[in-house]
Image 1 (cartoon, one colour):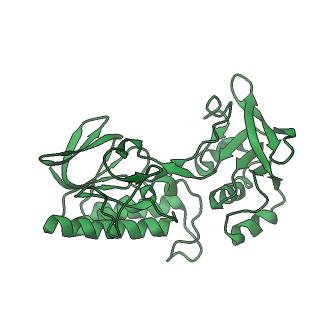
Image 2 (cartoon, rainbow, N blue to C red):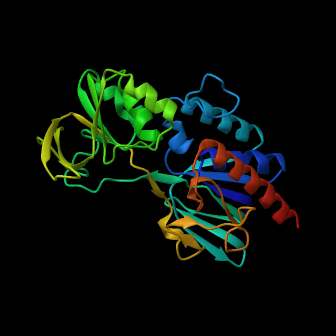
Image 3 (tube, rainbow, N blue to C red):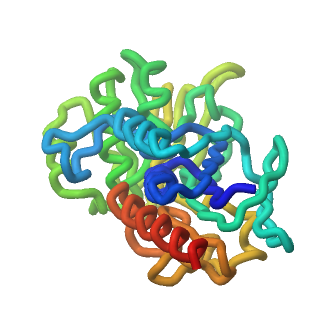
Length: 302
């Protein structure tokens, strides 16, 4: 029996573990993918306080984990498939086993949204990717495309411009949601070409790799063939915990909490990008994690 189980080892989950560990609570973190989540797959983070010249996402998350580990947090790399309320407390069920805790913090974050166009799934890992930092090195000296108009898309285009021979940024609108500083850098980059008012209609290629995209103009419907060997999708996030919809209150898959990160079920808290909220940044996830850690400590000591 653990005092608290934290589902997810991103910025929110690791921050919560630092707080519960310092409070001498027996803390287990369960993570299905990589320590640091989406943040660990970010090449450069420039808006996290304390790093005036930015910091690599993986390095920042490694520091978070080392700090949580220093205060006694344990880690298991397993996929959580269910969470139940039982007489003994909270039961977390993974692909490897079952664990009991007095309280749970859900910090599973969000996953990249898919385009859901023909060829996307077929060429996943064979040209289609959702992480430039993870897969960009495979596209040295060849043309690639990025889809999206937010911060993630613009940052991935800038990152890939140092690797690929050409980067096409495909956006369904003319205006970008990304921070203006990043947009200005992109506009000054000769290796990035904008494809505005266009959407990806399908991904095409041979039996082994994608080779081209079919684009459609959102105003005229006219199609265009774009030769590219890589496609990086950065069109937003979706909640990463579908199995929780029947347990706690959610909106569009995101978990509803009060100001202390408490969900609709006593003893179950949520923090970070999995929460129903407006902004999803590393800094806001850290704030959520701190509040959840403090709230769980108070709840258990009562």
